Length: 191
Image (cartoon, rainbow, N blue to C red; front, top):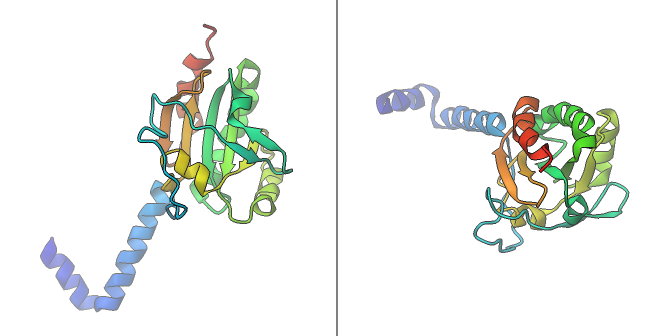
């Protein structure tokens, strides 16, 4: 295999080979989820932050109208917390399923919370929310929030929380309707 790579570099020339290799790596990042720059703020998260079985880190973030929303506002509900951005194709692809899930399970105590990592804030997010008829809570997150959840290194990243606010499932990369439904149905059962 190594000889094949050397031969490919020789045929293409090093700059062309590097370009092809770079494009292949970028394509893999897109398939797995949208890569995101690691936090530069140096916010320290606890060792178990964002892990299954740990309490979901609290947050206070503005919604698209500037109103402060807290994770505590969802206490007693099964919640899906989704880190995403409008520029991320896999993130965008999840939204129609999330809209359907929110419509179907809202009355049973289910809440979806979108945590947008768009640099442009509400200016970037509001047109998307309007176009896709997003029917769930949309908040404007930041690096501090991402770091509190263990450091979000790729989006989308989704956390499913039980009614006590404990993380019961974490999905890095795109998820779908069936996967989410399978995870939340047992949590929505009356205790």
